[in-house]
Image (cartoon, rainbow, N blue to C red; front, side, top):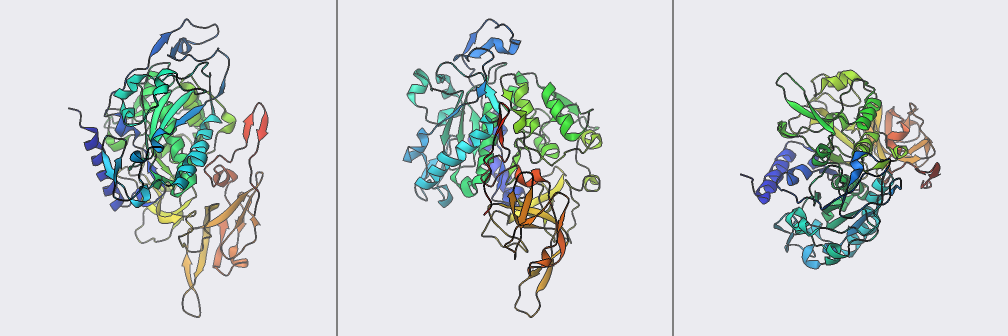
Length: 538
């Protein structure tokens, strides 16, 4: 018998809290574990209204079906237009105005408002004017569709879906939504951020209707919020198991002697981009997440072992959420998106690791020896803090849940962007990133004649990205220092906050791919021209 959705969500929250007690990513205020699969598996969705078309000349079989609002003539492609409906943000009974009042979670039950849930005029403006447009732009810069020639009419059948908890303007059912290729119903519920699809996945039909509740507490860091929203939007746009299955993009493989299964995306472009990223011609496809050892079905995220910092990993963390060529290829393989690969963001995790890593299929105890830039060795006596792979946190070596994959997990209050935190030898700020150190020691100020020397594995420094050049400034020195890839900086030469050792200069794409606002650091390419939004150094 299917469990009530309320019971499922409460159970999942309990698991999250339990996980936090043993050191999971939720200790960090900048980590988002997506719950799309857990919510969607509990419901059945209505099918989209369909119109049968005759195949147009020059089009593949996938283009012979459309939803009830037809797309324009073949050959015309334009950046996807995502319209946000904010009706629930205009109704004070649907969001928190003070502590203690019950407000909807948009999952079918109410929850008492906490201080961090309160929607002020400022947070509302930040969400609608800055954060959501930036998240949408991440998709519209990369995904094009054949635009709709008429308003997008929303079927009333979405009232039979999880979207029934969101407010839909009556005109969306009748006259439709103008200038829209997709519509999202947005709310600010008293719960973790989540998105849901409103209509069932159908072969060769592009998803067009979804809903999202974004908790105001998620606005703590706007750069993080942008990537979380972009992640959730991607599920609604089609990056989910059901849509990939409908498009025949999936296969399954055994990953161990017990015949435990892992789902992989084997469609042509996705496989090609995976080959390029991992430098392995023999890769079968791109592995999907295998959560809780659930062998009965596949999931809507890349396996974290392979794509920890990808936008579509199951856990979006601080500086991660990288919109990679592999993720873009998955959209392209669905058939109803044309993608702009010149806008692909580079992910360091797994880049060029080769076939041994790919063929291993699961984490092993000696991974830290073979792939030291990705994995770590847990040593309870080692209290040194190291940089996370996304270079936004300092953290310690631990695993997530029971997946046996050991890597540097961000510690609470370890974000380089958190100006209220004090980290040994670190210069905090909105443009700060974590850089690795070698034999790096910092002077900790104490009430004694001589400072106490503390060893650190990495420090936060402010970063300025020029055209393929990186400059940094560190604690105790307000000057900018050029930091070319592979170079070294000896901060003790100019700063009394350091005792000895050096800072390793990063690759450009590690610290310049994502801007402090969460937007892409890649200049926008369109029709051969480059549109650069680079900021100036202050």
